[in-house]
Image (tube, rainbow, N blue to C red):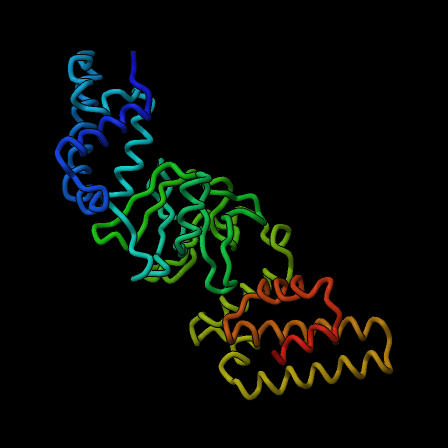
Length: 303
């Protein structure tokens, strides 16, 4: 008969009493003595469980009292004790998502501690968006989620590889991988597999297009690139378009109001792209204001 969980750990506790380990020094003693003993007993347990000859050792190794189904839990506990990410030193860590079957690199993102824990707890990739300044579950809008198959730490425990099953595509452009531009070949090597306009909406798609123009080679001419390279011009156009919206609302047709509003939205998105502020953060601010009067909102800014 297997000894219950509590009894197994009580044996360890009473063993400490027998060897006169003071209760107040448990933490330091655990690090230097108890944890190594547990590690050793776990592997002894695993070896003898496989050989079917573990009963004679159960009184001496409490972990032998655990059923084989408990080994995954012990593995996780021991792994967390041995390899820990230093979130104080690195509040954000880079994370590479890699296909578990093909080893294809799909994307690079970042995690904070909360996103990392959510990933382990849910089995789906969660990241921290630096542009949106919030945690997001991969695929929360598109449905293109990433199922975790394994989590690998590098030798310094400051970078993570997620071995995943990618549902749909990984890149917001509609391509399977975010790494689709070859520097050597000087061309795009992956075709779009999904229409992202239908998934993310025109505003988000336009914003990402603006960022692509921002990072494009100087030889690729565009109005967006010109605005981004000339801050004074960009600001003057935003002011100009805002004034034209006011004039259209006051004097012109509905069609002209829509046209001028589209111009203002585009130039405002260019401004957001210049500052690398995601439209999602504007949406978050609008959501925050729901249920709050304009007077209350303005008063809150003064505090």
